[in-house]
Image (tube, rainbow, N blue to C red):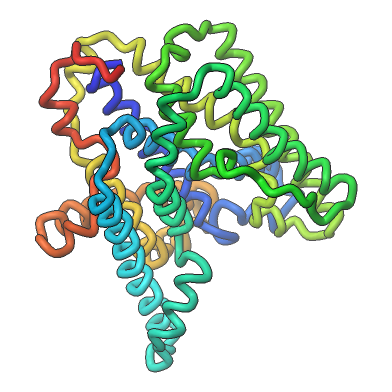
Length: 372
């Protein structure tokens, strides 16, 4: 895969991931509004969408792993700076979100830094749970690089199978049997912050995707459909059992069999890009979206709530689903524009580390240069 192809692969996957992450964050007034009216005609199609959006964080980590695990080893000091910078950005924008929430409820006089820090440590604000996963990725980065570069094909297949068993089969079967939990600790390699980056790396830097046939890709899509069917069925069973379709918004089972669909999405996008002619790729000009994508993620967490007026204004005419799509797309566009402006401010730009391939890397290398 050439550098330019790899750039567009990352660009497509990251943009899709951010869109799905934000769509999943629109709440009961947005994407999950259908759960409050289970008799509506659009209930089941939108139920499928709730399964699709859960792939957002996983796809983002796959794109991150495909790039970062290929890089030369960072020094300890540089890695620590990376982690501190990411934590600093999350803290700053979480504070902005926290203050905004107090201001809109006229509780600003109750601001307490100790309370804020306590809540920040206990769980993410806004859409920042994905960014917590990025922190976990960089903490384990040196170990993941060793695993990525020394695993053989059998190890990769084994990891996928064990992922499906531990993360998929056990939780679902346990719930259907009435068990509150199965006391088996999930291995570190199966956690989302490790599994999906490794898969992203292997799909890009091995010849697996080049060898895959149309028939095999079709089988992957059929398996993805089966996975979504299982997750939807179990979620509906839980809703009926508890007598509350609102539990759909909790997405309790959306990660159980998410591995197969995520791999299928990634392979499909990569196959499409690999099959594009050189002339088509050359006409596409790289932008600085990837370089600012981490900053976009930070900013969307702050501006998503104020822009909810878009959803409220459109819902009576277009419905909550279409309104959510427009709300999210507008949020991404505005966040990108804000990130571009802030990137020119010396102090702020340091909070936006480039964690994906910079467009200059794709632009300054000939198309024949290989990523392999």
